[in-house]
Length: 220
Image 1 (cartoon, rainbow, N blue to C red):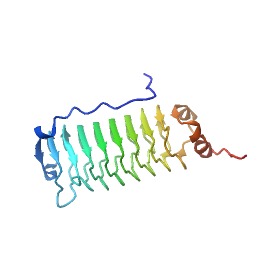
Image 2 (cartoon, helix red, strand yellow):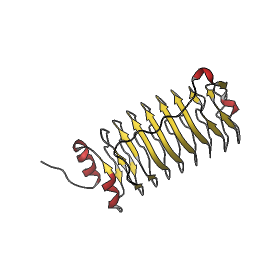
Image 3 (cartoon, one colour):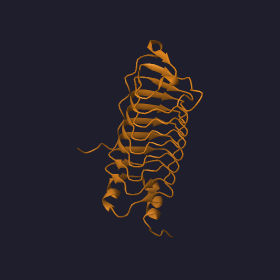
Image 4 (spheres, rainbow, N blue to C red):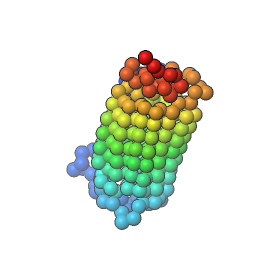
């Protein structure tokens, strides 16, 4: 099935704030199942847990700063001004999630399954998504220098009007990648699979950056 050129991830169906039951981040333990919570109180120490499940919740502030949550499952949630700096969520499954004005410096989501995610105005330098599968993922007006998608499977990804300098696409399978309006200087491409290039959408203004990545000399 062909992926449309423009897509908007499905918005999470989250109940109103006043209907939620507050929950502290310390409730996240191994195999924890948290549903319809406001997670806004940080644990004294970075949270470490495996196989946790969070559904239909709001995550705020520094509650998950530097957390280590392998195999976490998060569905139908909103992250508002959340700080996930230094968090490690490997082998995660994230589905139908909004990230608004979040900090994700060094966030590690390698080998994760990412579906219907929408990042808006987020700061995420050194974001690691090595080996991840991305389906209907979108970044709008985000700062993404050094985004690493080495070995990832990109089914449908849009990085629009964002800073994506030094984007790494080595050994990456690309079905649909929309980079229109973004800064893509020093992009790293895998030239062993030319078919990938046909699935990247850019504007004419971005063509020189892509040409340089392909080894083309540009001169007057």
